[in-house]
Amino acid sequence: MSARTYQVRTYGCQMNVHDSERLSGLLEDAGYTAAPEGATADVVVFNTCAVRENADNKLYGNLGHLAPAKSANPDMQIAVGGCLAQKDRGEIVRRAPWVDVVFGTHNIGSLPTLLERARHNRSAEVEILESLEVFPSTLPARRDSAHSGWVSISVGCNNTCTFCIVPSLRGRERDRRPGEVLAEVEALVAEGVLEVTLLGQNVNSYGVEFGDRLAFGKLLRACGGVEGLERVRFTSPHPKDFTDDVIAAMAETPNACHQLHMPLQSGSDRVLREMRRSYRSARYLSIIEKVRAAMPDAAITTDIIVGFPGETEEDFQATLDVVRESRFASAFTFQYSKRPGTPAADMPGQLPKQVVQERYDRLVQLQNDISWQLNKEQVGRTVEVVAAVGEGRKDADTHRLSGRARDNRLVHFTPGTTHVRPGDVVEAVITYAAPHHLVADGPLVSHRRTRAGDNHEAGIRPKTGGVGLGLPSFGAPAPLPPAQACAAEVPALDGGVR
Image 1 (cartoon, helix red, strand yellow):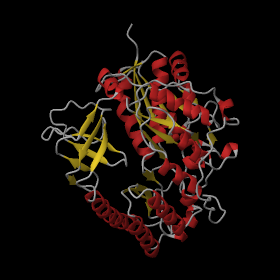
Image 2 (spheres, rainbow, N blue to C red):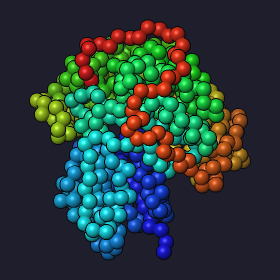
Image 3 (cartoon, helix red, strand yellow):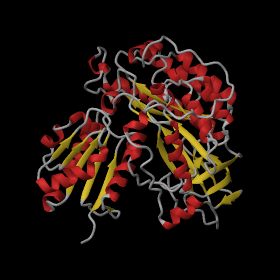
Image 4 (cartoon, rainbow, N blue to C red):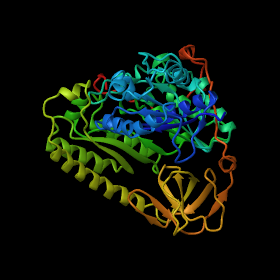
């Protein structure tokens, strides 16, 4: 009898992408195999997001599309997990009774057992835990990439942003021991990975659970000592927790990429106060100034929300002013989305759609102009690119491949007659700039074959997991190497909460 096949469909943030790697690893450990491209899987898992207003519609629309396949094949199973499952719980089965399993953000490790139980009992299984039992990184993972990997350093969030539903769905912040984080990084590198991204809902508050405010900077420096690790990134930091030692660690650690994604959300101090973001625009701009003083080549990106309740034209102009001064390489811009259960959903001054859309269009135009100007400055420069899958395209006419530069800019390059595999490292001269990508159409300056490229060609993906022993790993950390001398910490503004 052939193994049952699975497919995991992921929506939302990087945390969800990483959770989906864990779900795939769990299913493969349980004997399932990934469904071929285009085939209908025996088990379809939706790993959902609840941040945007249309998340519900997207999920139930996709579940509706699967209803005929489920009707034609009763042995097919459909599972729903992630943040929307944590929020809606039994409502999912009520609205889509053909769903077999619903599980939450705190018990992704239960999926194989819940599928087996639902198959045996011929009834839906709904299991939503209120707190984390096992840190996700203790679970097996089937990594999507042979050359890069997510490494979770914390889960949950202690902030109370009035627009955000994540803390109620992911729980309070829980930190991994530094030694366990480094063990996972080393395990990935041992399997050929060149690049890791340290991941957390609020990554630079790492250490809050064991009382070391400088732990994140120390962790960055420790990653610099992992032989074979060529690039270290992190996402996403919070301005209120951004200390000078982290800037020093980024600048002084050779494999730390000079790239920073730091959410702004609004440039209006009044709106930031209503959002419960405990920094103000001057504090935000001061961080950017220090980053650029230490790393003039740093590419800084951000998140911005347009149309928060009560936002005036003056507030919006303040956001445009900060965007002009910050000169972001790119920005993820969002129209405010009301989420039930968040304080902002009940605030007065909810703005008409047409007002929000008009402001959003102005912001996007401004940011596109800035991104294009900054990208034009890259023309003529030689950049190092790790070739990747799913980054843009392999163009049939130009035969371009795609990858990311060290500052995370997307680069489309022409390999010529060189056989470049995803995971290989090339150097190329930028010949053209667009707002959202760069092009290098000349001959390659260099090409380095890597073990990651070998693994991609052979269809091998890292399957790390089991690093740490569950909840006991949240205890006191093993010591990290001491931080090098750096500037004094920047005091937090306001003393409030995010």
